[in-house]
Image (cartoon, rainbow over all chains, first blue to last red; front, side, top):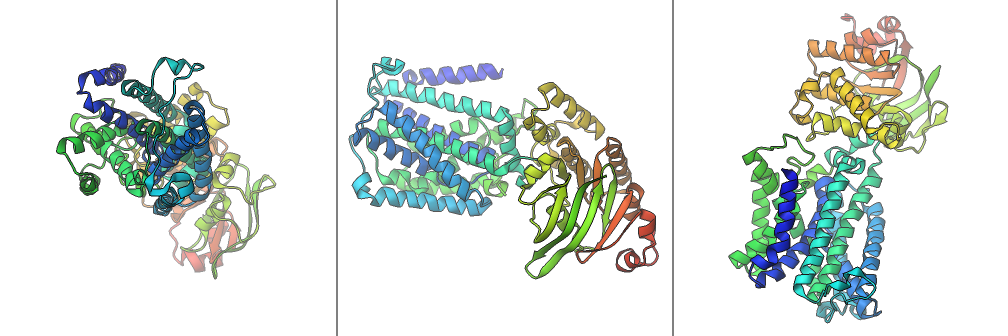
Length: 331
Length: 244
């Protein structure tokens, strides 16, 4: 049953570009990229209870880094992107070791600050980032003779879609695997009760850093994909508002569940499109959504569907209702 | 044979001395009780023994080795596992999942295979009477069962020394009797236990030896019988007409 569902979902996303109008292919690519970042955030926030408000910053740092490595140093995407992801991993580990000593809202406020710092750097380090003018002419990943991926031409939107899809499926598969391991169980334990987790012999700090880095790595992957797809970057793409909307998207979809980030990301792209929302009004809508969901739908859409249809697997899964305000959960 | 020793342990919070110059030992296999009025420093003592607080001065020794500078999880790894006065379980997870997580140490030590883990969870479920209800969420359990689960979690970490902070506070007589039975069985497995409890009948019935604290100082030590008749203990804690 579950296997069929997964197969159907993968198949559907594979044929989706041929079903929807061509215009929406662009939306699909962006949804996929966004979903990778939110899936990452889900590891830190949904499963571990860390209210990390800097996911878009990690995405931005990676986007800028990958773009600049290719443009300024002439590196190939296939070298620049992995280098970027590794660098962001190291950066997040360093930041994590320092900031994860703080708990709950103190940590949230701290990541809020990091987010602002990242934006200020993007906006003001003109010699490197070109400030508010942003970066143009980022190139799509080149065909390379040395990689099997050279078969596909990533300047083609459709091919890029499949490239993103592969990485998205890999990210999700990784999280599924992770949550079945002892490490995954430790993360959930920390979300549920940090002090008890420690009393049970769990090295809380180590696992929190692990979750934070995992989350940042996925943001970095999304950032690299974003830069070489859109081909231009501006600081406004990676503000605190973007980080906050990822949090809201996660909550709306259902934090601490595998499907939640996918659902949330899809809604994030589709609903404004249908309602034809002016981008400036998006945050107002998000604010309202946020309040409504926190109060009335604490488990997100996934939690809601479980309540309506019943949790057929019969488990009080590690995710059930996991979205009770994440700040409170991370104490 | 002592496995744990406190030497002149003091803990100050600002100007307040939560424990002052405490020295005592825990002997292998014994059941040690700790009593004293509220604010006597009992829970602080547990927090010191398990690394949640660092002593201001003095030394804590586990099998002759100092615990100074160790984190709570490292101390748990060495075999000292505690429960909390405020009953702590992993609230939104099933009983089974709670126990699975609680086996973290046994799994990291590489001691337990998947089979052994499953057996251990199964036997704990049965031991505490959760077999039929293993899939329900911990926060839906009645209070008494949550207390039991918190002891089960500590036990799953495979302790040599188990520290119990008021395991029967708020329980009714039947539940209290059940808990006494459980703790006796744990003792039968050779686990050394230290118990903080205000229920004197419960504590005196279980413990081999009792220490009484008042204002962070040890004022008496002895068998339950000796403690019950200790003038100082009666004065500060038990009162004149005692029920036990």
